[in-house]
Image 1 (cartoon, rainbow, N blue to C red):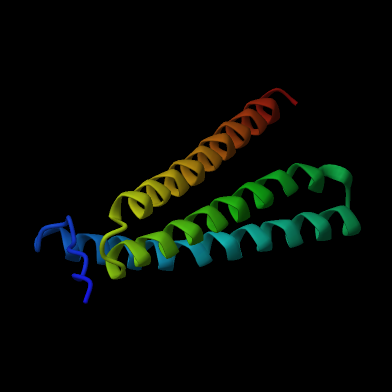
Image 2: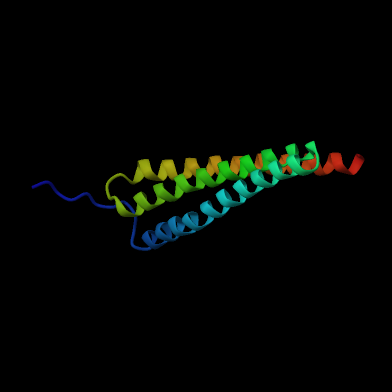
Length: 122
């Protein structure tokens, strides 16, 4: 009979990992929903009034992408908490997904700041 793998996390770290998975599982669908709503708003603005709605579409796409990346991070955090003996791989995947999501949000922030700066001069 093979020995059961042991966790490399301490008893104090396990609840933190579980809370991380819970927070990511709540935040990811919200960002995804907000991204889809921004995409729909952009299409409606293009259809109803002007081509100015094209500026809204990248916002929706970046928000939805960040939501998908955080959804992947939430799944990895769940596996990190539940599956013992594979902590290194799941922790690496969780942190990489969070990094990608924050990079998308940083690009979104730069895009929104650029659009706001341009609107000051127009």
